[in-house]
Image (cartoon, rainbow, N blue to C red; front, side, top):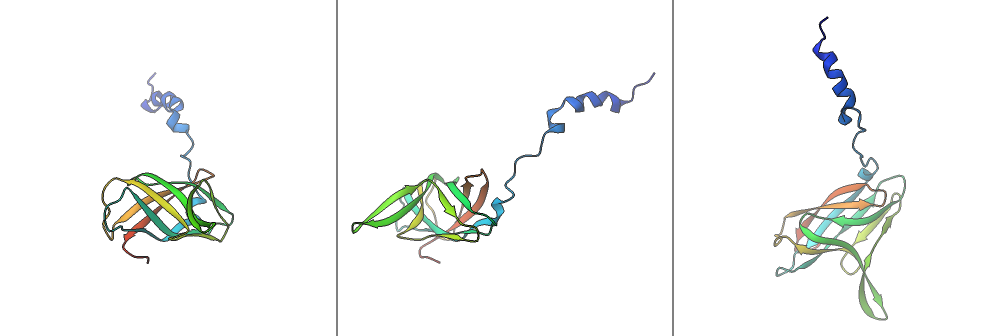
Length: 152
């Protein structure tokens, strides 16, 4: 009796984990969050720390919570907020940034902003810097910031 080649391969397909594996986790709702008018202020001389600004827009039907930001161009990226306390400007890190459904969070000089530390190279005006926004639900949102001398 002759065994067909496809029948010989069948046991291998049944044992191969990739044949039955679930598709990779995706972030279906993350796409409704974005950064618009994102920019990094170009300093007059190279610095180990820069600031990023823009509007985080939530077009989702429910609230989103930003818990981290990363960039391949910086050793560390964090959310910060500057506030006046007893007449003194104070900056503090923010661990979670909620953005209401249909709402936005505005990052601007003197307020909410990204601290971009340890750049891998000197930035040049017009350059676009990639970011990834990490959400509390595990979703990730790609974004970019334009390097500029002045606000858009």
